Image (tube, rainbow, N blue to C red):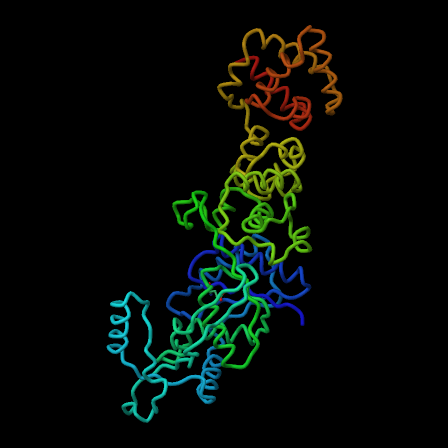
Length: 462
Ligand code: GLU
């Protein structure tokens, strides 16, 4: 039987880092086993689900390049099926109508609280005949769960988890208004979608016990469960806003590349042993049994180092396009060609997209270019006499290729009898306004003759 996994986010907010990791692991496991990964939007809660959140989830997944098989399934469109299955359970005696009133339930809650227990339904309608209910009284449908023994959930991450059935009450499948509960709709959909493996956060672990009981009542084989420990902040505490970026969109806005974020997410809970894993290298290696049992911690340094790596390997034109907006230019600005050509010299050192933009800005700066303070300090009177010598030599020089320019500057340093850096640094300062940049011959070759000479002249006349 081929594997079917699913990612089933509730569209009540953005796609956060935990959800993205679940999505990623469901896809990796499906790819690893040659199966399918499905996407379901758990939007039965019509009050809390929003169209904006659905779009945010799609956009987040799309940006990360996480592709599911087939079209997404919208849970709320399957309402009649949820009702049908609840009625089927009712007809087979595995579920029953409960007419307990809000006041009665409140009393049960209080009684449980007095004994320090979680709210629990006492099963008062479990064996009663519905004919005892007042005429037309509203009811919910509850599952007739086993009263004794235990529900055992083998889990691929946490080993086996055992729940005492006495701790699990007869929970609601269908509410008074006919709407299904999360517990019920999830199981009905997972069955209909043919889901074989449920990979999700371990905050759903108790749900697994209840959901397993629905499978049992329906006589359907339970899926394999793999509950992944949640992601914690660097301080080991549960994730919250205080920990900074937790929404996937924030990572994009901070200038991380999607493949770097994906690679970083793989490291959260999975000790892959792979150096900078990608979807291609990870899928063959991924297995549920490799996932850690304790919460992973966010690690900003690991993300930056992943980004550093993937920036270096990204295509020049793509990076040029990404930095244009940071430089105040439109994505189709003609400067893209210059930035693309300049990229090999820039991308080796950049941590993020804005950082890359910052290091590239001098190429587009209009003359006279601004000088950073340190660059200003380099341009002493003595240093400027060296710049002038090069400037003069360049004026009669036609070959503007990188190699010719490099040879010329080298020859000038020799003629001036100074170490290369004594000439290179002031030239760099004059040409870029900075104290670090790609080599001066590269910069001049890319800027072109007129612009390079203009910048040198500006420095000399300042
Ligand atoms: N919709 C649920 C959530 O977003 C997850 C459902 C499940 O994985 O069973 O928390």
